[in-house]
Image (cartoon, rainbow, N blue to C red; front, side):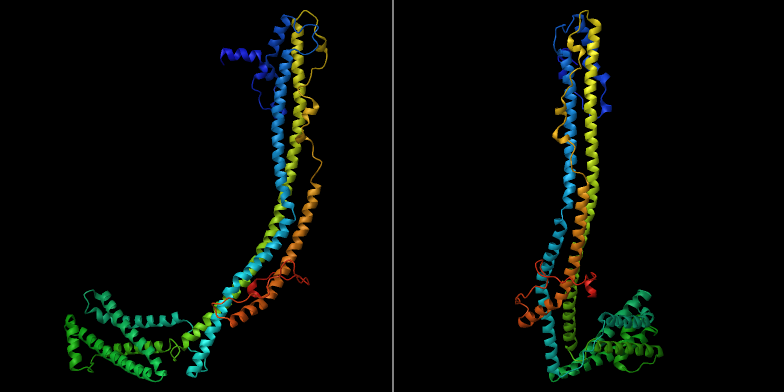
Length: 510
């Protein structure tokens, strides 16, 4: 510290920085006396017999002591007031969780969300219903046009049906792979690839021939064209199997590298001359795969062309409508369940808030007690410091001490100043809060019951709601909007049946 600052600190000790003392343990009277230089000041004033005998009040040194302790008290009071304000803010935040409006708002939100779901699903349900009805009309028109009354016949799983074709390709390819490997530069791998190509052509063409045979059910030119195309396909398959058979025989001959040329020459000269038993067996396997592929193509859909597609459209449209209805019921359940969980969450938050409120009250009580103890300690320390100053002064001087030396030293603050409004003990306790929590729990239980009754009433209104949509869909095409009917969701002002509380079952089971 610079000399000028030291001089100023000695002349004006009250301007020194006062530390923040918040507990009695922080109050070090000896350190304060050293800081204020109490003994030095007492001896210095005693050498000149000051204060004079006729003085009627504390001198500047005692006033500096009082001012210093008053500064300690003022900082402590400010700290305690701020701490209590923080606790009061915590208490106000906790008290907000006990408002019954928090749980009654969940019931109003359930009504609002249910009406929103009703409005959101009205147009999609109407459109899906119109599509299903249109598909049914198309099916009836197709049956009337072609004079059929039976149900369409087609595989339940088209994927599994087509998977059988892959099995046929694999069987024929494995049967031919060894023979084709003799004429391939890549050995068994190349032979297997050639066999896969040969088997794939056989199965694909046979499958298409089977599909072409469907058109034999039609009349007129289409039946004639189907017969011609089917005949050409069967002839092509026969020629194909003979060609592959001659190629196999050439592969087992003396010149497998010239198998293609020899097979073509022998096919032209003697097409039906197959002298190799294994070749005959492989041709038989290929024919069986071709017949199986043709049967698979014929049974891949209803024999009457177009009948299976129309039937599948009907089933898809009906399934879409049923799925949309199930989703609507699921949304209703989700809405009520979400608000029911929200009510339970509010109650849990209120219970936690009560615990936090009580903890805050205890903390505030400890703060007030600590402040009261600190105030008494500051008063006692201030008076003890003044007495030490007076005693030290009296030991040095040779004149009589002033009369006020025999009186009690003045405190650094008055009792009225110490009792700040923030530090007054509150009259309210936690008993009233416990009663408010009980009231909230009762209201939450009542709201839960009303939510369950609302869910039951909503489910009971679903058939009427769907009937209105279907009626509006039958009266207008899918592009037109139906006129809104009576709402299916009871409003909070409407009467809700209260005879029994249903179990909040999953909507899919309703």
